[in-house]
Image: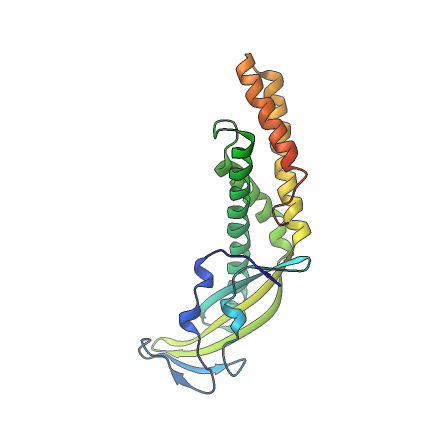
Length: 210
């Protein structure tokens, strides 16, 4: 498995690691008692960062103390899906920025921020549907306001789907730049649009996950 060095809020869970063998009052959480867990202790994968495992990427999502177990599971899946979109959007932006520099293009020609947002929209509409739960870990807590379920999920998403969305976004940007080149009012605008079209053509042949 190939780990990817990146820091997201969901993966800063190390401080919550602890054994779940029977009821346990957690220090600092006044009046909260862990009364049940699906495993004897919280698995190490609950604090894993995104990783590539063969032809899939692995992500971890969390739901904090919901009234029922199904609600906690649903929220954990929503959380991990959001992690996928945000994380890969950032990866795409980094790639756009590096290649734009290598092409000698300014942000007025290629805007990495705007382009990564377009990619996130593609992901949210397409890849998110392919996020699948692989592992679950559940905890049941007694709190001053009642019972709460906490859920952790390890989910997978195919790298092929991730890269397809990346390529589709690049292709759409390429076609838009080509239209601008045809409609350009002067040589300067035409050159900028042509340069952008060449950049996006190159990007359309790559993937965000190598």
